[in-house]
Image (cartoon, rainbow, N blue to C red; front, top):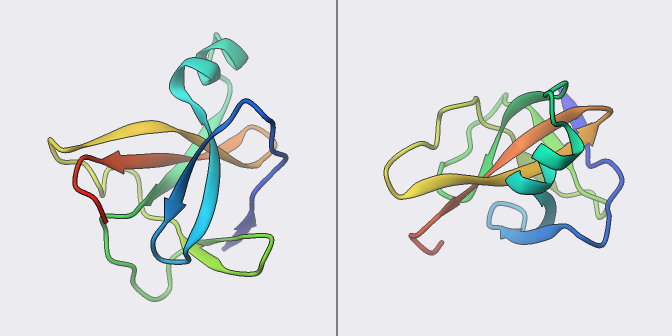
Length: 104
């Protein structure tokens, strides 16, 4: 399935995604807790610089037309990685942004 990033705000953090060399804007976890104090949003996968992409996976298209792979939830977890925040790809639909202490 193909997704697109949803509206962006000024108070978002950003990271550079290595597969597409695109800048990803995302909400930090604290902001998500403010926006959705009772939950009510869906996380469909993860964006990570650490995992190698494979064919046939879901993708997010950037405004410039580049593809960012979406990995299944839990694929990037090891002691050196954490969920930094969430990038919006639809109405109450997000992908988790995984950061690592290992530079990519």
